[in-house]
Length: 249
Image (cartoon, rainbow, N blue to C red; front, top):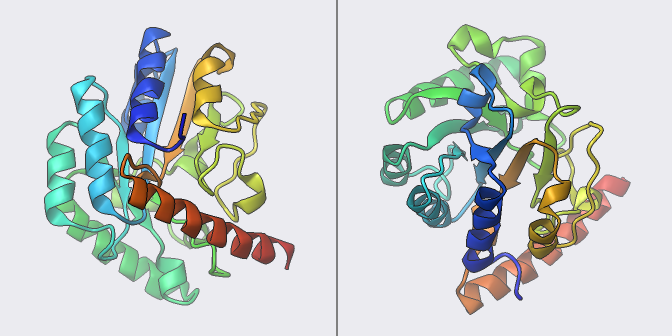
């Protein structure tokens, strides 16, 4: 079976449901986590329409997830954000202002605040998540070495406010589930170690997952359309080669 299709994504969700996992948006998890829970996190880096498809699939199954939007045309779309929020999904800010401002922390904070207000005109924003900006020398999380996001009414940032000793973490970064070798910043430290080669392996070995899991999806990588699916596969293979080079530098 081909991986990174909407069909296998549906099977993935159905398997979690059958194992009695519950689902929480990240903000709810921060405030009152379920004992056995999955957090479906979505980094909307590009092809925002794909994220809307993910949101619809989840809504059909009475599942709510969290969608982090960048402030760039390939991600930010008022109509898409409002429609996803109307289904009960959480909207968050996928910030990258340290990258955008060339590492100027004061300019980065001002840009962050401006963008946060724009997003809050569309939906409540309680959590944020850094964009990895793999080709940039700037880690966007460094913004919080000087400023505090809780001063802005933000209650959580997945990389900074999740106990990954307790919560297992899997991400499709690099268009694979074992992509640590091609991930610049989408990494966490914790006791849960996985080496799933594809989504089907996660489905088949779901009973090996801990009681609390966070999955990160980049919906632009998932498609049932052969041309789009193949294009993404080729582009991601090229990106992975570049990231391997950057990691070795």
